[in-house]
Length: 203
Length: 131
Ligand SMILES: Nc1nc2c(ncn2[C@@H]2O[C@H](COP(=O)(O)OP(=O)(O)OP(=O)(O)O)[C@@H](O)[C@H]2O)c(=O)[nH]1
Ligand SMILES: [Mg+2]
Image (cartoon, rainbow over all chains, first blue to last red; front, top):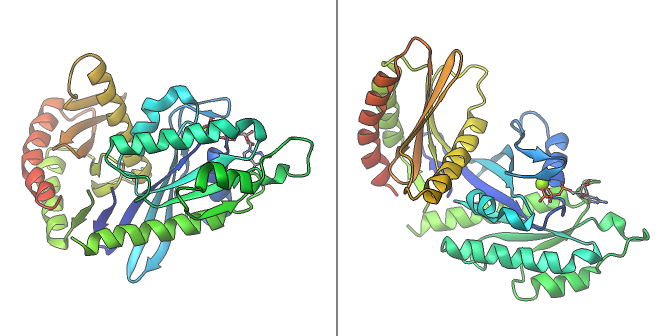
């Protein structure tokens, strides 16, 4: 749920990074945090981690400057990807305005990507949000492993598995190296601000 | 379900928080929504990361609501954490908002409870009228 403060001409939106466990959601936020200047980023909060697995969520607030006289504040969250933490995922999804789905390019994760996207669709539906309505961007992560001896999915196969029906913007990326991370953020921010302002105008 | 508040509404919220909560001796008071957005903060939050506090409080409240459901309650209306020097008090405001009050050891919990309950009654129509 976005919040627009007309006394400051400011809009706040919530963007959630979703996807299967170990897919690279936290790594996306860590990259953004270290790549951005202090004037843009707030403090990153990572709660309740066990090793590098997210148990609750990560949080990174960003001030993305002005669009048409409105200053844009965006709050990035990650969910825990592990299947058993669905209650926590639902909690973090509350009031979401835009979603980045981080898919894992590892061949062994093919089914997990599909299951996680289906889980997202269901959790949104329970909150009366249609996955086809809300801004959504796919990121095919870990493309840096192409050419290594670890088997990975082709982009075509991932498109076929995940994006055939949805037809949303997508990016190849490597959160570890930072490839595609800013592109993903730019696209989802643009889409979310547009979506929020369109809803506003139709009131 | 987006919230848009005019300058007038924000001003009304600010004066209600100042009069009812800060005057009761609270150090700082924040109004946040349950998705983690910070609506208004008042008082002296030097060195306090209010944006992170808003996000964590919303999540904490959400988690507690799930616990409530597990034991057959709808929700808990308030939460209170006591520290050595600083205490924190959370009150539900309507369905969608939380009021977070920070106060020191010299301020009585009873007074904070009374005043946050009163300000909640003022806030609900301001917020609800514009949902
Ligand atoms: N090679 C490679 N490894 C990556 C990339 N992104 C993340 N990783 C690694 O994958 C592992 C899991 O990454 P996380 O970012 O913790 O994954 P997550 O999606 O947050 O996982 P959960 O919190 O369990 O849901 C870590 O060891 C990362 O270093 C990438 O682009 N390339
Ligand atoms: Mg994680």
